[in-house]
Length: 269
Ligand code: KIV
Ligand code: NA
Image 1 (tube, helix red, strand yellow):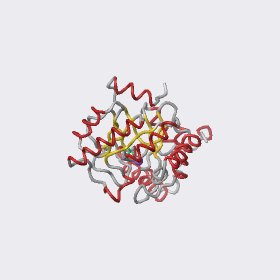
Image 2 (cartoon, rainbow, N blue to C red; image 1 turned 180 degrees about the horizontal axis):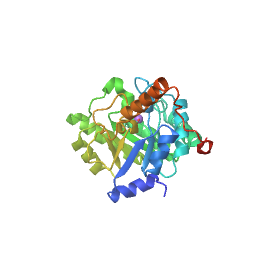
Image 3 (cartoon, rainbow, N blue to C red; image 1 turned 180 degrees about the vertical axis):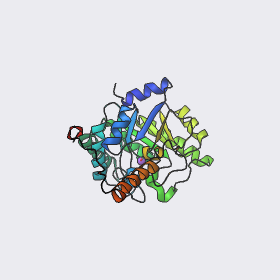
Image 4 (spheres, protein in one colour; image 1 turned 90 degrees about the horizontal axis):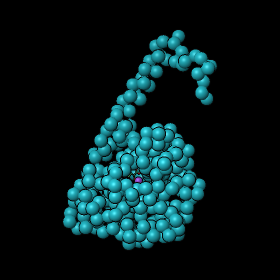
């Protein structure tokens, strides 16, 4: 059965952990969906990891839509959430509605994620929710604010921790169906998780969240900039490099070896 924002609320009550990962193209999305991942996020980490930008800030809504459409084609069961890129929602509730509307109407996403939980952001979230658009929040380390926050752990002082808890509560009150907690103290993540009725999804926030998310390329060891908190489950960079090396050696040192299988019957495209 397809996962919906309502499913998530029930799972929190049942203490069933939520498995979430990122995807930016059809091929990866299909693998994740078929593996039973509950929530697939077209994260704007796309900007840095797949498109090579220095930060997430330059990513446009058009670029995001291009990738979100590809991911949509690979997802059948998982809940599909798409990040709204920097400055495609912060300006006003109207701007957010316009951008989120495109993500749902053109890319077929079910929900959007946006960063921050200050009062203006809660107002924006409330506007989207009232229009029927499910919203996922994101507090703690919010990479779209990198020029203010850097990439350091958040919530390390009492004042910061109180602010992050207040933001998460405000997002819940505004109608968000879940909230990502990125790179915060695990004690704080546990407190936030206990105080919210909506699920928390942690990344670098300890084991006390209702679910976990990672950038798929990070867990596969495929990123060129690995965050300190991401556990690496495979070493795809090395595997790919070795395969390319073997292929290159085949081509260069054995010109008589054709590096292709022969049969026409094996053709699938
Ligand atoms: O952009 C992204 O991949 C994200 C997740 C890491 C939460 O926002
Ligand atoms: Na993001």
